[in-house]
Length: 368
Image (cartoon, rainbow, N blue to C red):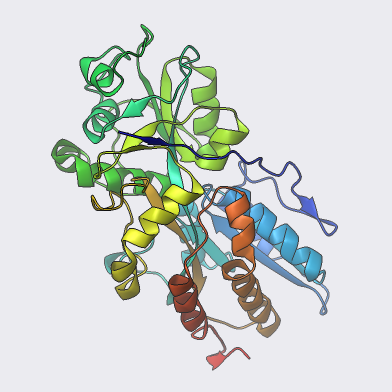
């Protein structure tokens, strides 16, 4: 069996570009979004407000800064409040766009305005842990990982963990699970994977942005999960890969259907996307977890993240700027995504995005 390793990349430290400060994200609630959204701007300036996924926040920060540098009349304020919060903000009409790692299924559209769901990036959900004595990535099979999150595996010396890591001197420490406390697209990706690989998980917990976790402590946002794992020896959790790298936390190698233990990386997430190409061509909301056995280099806990955008609006300047921003993200912005450990969108999905964007309207009319 092999372990595929990723290269590290650093998260940008500044959230200020082109003279515009991106709002502090972790502490902002929907009420704060409403306040930002309703502020007036000069007629020659445009302010866009978005909210949602913490998973995509590192690259969204760069995208907004880069776009504003080239378009100084446009200010973009993205609030990292979780995918569930972003969807609710779109539903309430308090933002111009949302971002979610959990696309809306047809049965979840009730009460929503007509929306477009546009893939903006993809990435791996990294399993992070705090075991300072280990010098190589801990390896976890699907059965072991599901047992940890079910609470049936309680110590790092459990026979199942030992079987996955022969010859490794595992610490005599209890397993402390840390999960998201709020509705989260990152949770949706992980629980969709666990549902696919574990009948026990499927029966007892299931998948979704917010589930009844059998064990563990909740952390607010990816920042909260990262902080708790970092401070607690024996802890294990899940976040976007960039959060793990920025906080110098190790990531587990997860066994895929091909029998390989693979660590999260841009390349291994891209391999997961490629393995689902025919399905994504039919519906871009198709989960890309647990790729088939032939995708031996694919990381099995990967997911697409989406813009959730009201199909129609009334402000022509805003809607035009929003369309231009999305075009940048799914075009030139993909190079930035790659540099921050997100998998760039394949050409086929970018082409689908371009077609979907044609449906964006202002007062019912196409945006030129």
